[in-house]
Structure formats: C-alpha cells, structure tokens
Length: 114
Length: 108
Image: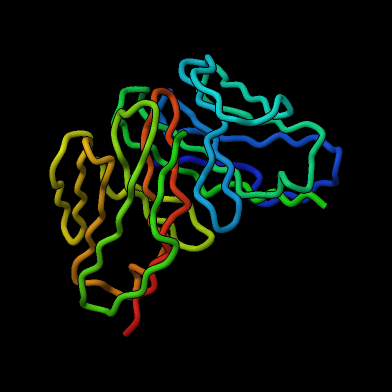
C-alpha cells in the first residue's frame, strides 16, 4: 500500500510568489493535517481537514489556506511568500478524527523562499 | 499558555538505556504521541498513551502521568540506528502540538 505522498519534494520560490503543495493520504484515510517544520524545531500545526471540511486551524496568517477534495487529497496554498515561510511542509493522514488515531506522515515538501 | 518541553540533545552509548522526558501544558488532552524522525525524513509513529501508565512495545516503552503533565520514552538496548530526533506530541482537540524534539546521538 502506498503511504502518504506529497508533491513536489523540493521547491524554490521568490518572495511575493504563491505556492501550492499537494498531498495524497493513505487509501481509506479521511483526515489530512498540514504542518510546517522549521529546521531544528518540531512540526507546527497549520490545518486539519476531515470529510472535506476544515476542522482545525493553527496560528498561521490568512496567507495560508487549504482544501480537501472528494477523494480526500488535499492542497496547501501559501500566498505572498515571505523568507520566513522557508520550511519543510508535512502532510499527515489518519483514518479519522478520533483521539488516538495514529497519524502517518508524508516525506514532506521542502520549500525555499529566496 | 501551551507548552511542550523536552531536552534539546542527549547522548548515550550503544547497548545502553536512555529515557527522554517530556512535560506538557495544553488546554485539552486527547492523548500523547512519540514520533521518531531521522534527519531529512518524515516522522514515524512510535507510541501512544492516553491513560496513565506504561505502554511497552519491543525496545521502546512510553509512560504517561496526566496529573503531572509528564511523559517519558524509554529506549532499551540502544542501537546506532536509534540516532534520531524524538518528538513528543499532544493531541489537543483538533490539532497535534509537537515539542521541539530531542536529538539523540548513540555512540559506539
């Protein structure tokens, strides 16, 4: 079975540009969460989507948005990129929203903003 | 405030036992997770605790005390491949909050 897949794996963008990151969850998983991980830090929660609806949002500006599609894949969009947005963006999928449900992470998209 | 604290770095010897502590203060609690993350790779799930006590899984064990806001991950019979960052995470209501991670170096 394929795990969580993210694309692209690496990306270089210029300040002010917009970027879209993609995530395909494990087959059968309905919940997708997005995290930002800066080097040397733990992942920071950005969004959770379940059954195509936003269920949780972390402390990130409105430049960050996301959506989930009928097939449960998801996109994270970041507008007006800043140098500080350079990070590893991780997508995690889980079977549902129930507490304790294990989250499986994709390999991440490494975004560099120059 | 909401904090998840764990030591930044630890070093241990191959074959030894190491305990990585985590203390947390969160507005909600729906379980505590430990993840392992090798450099440049995605975090992988190690353990989950929601009730007080010890959960054992092979060489890895995790303990939780909800009243103290405290957990630890115990790694036995350390191997060189255990050199990695270990992330403590607490599931709040809809999100999972991570600590900064503990970088463990296993030496021969």
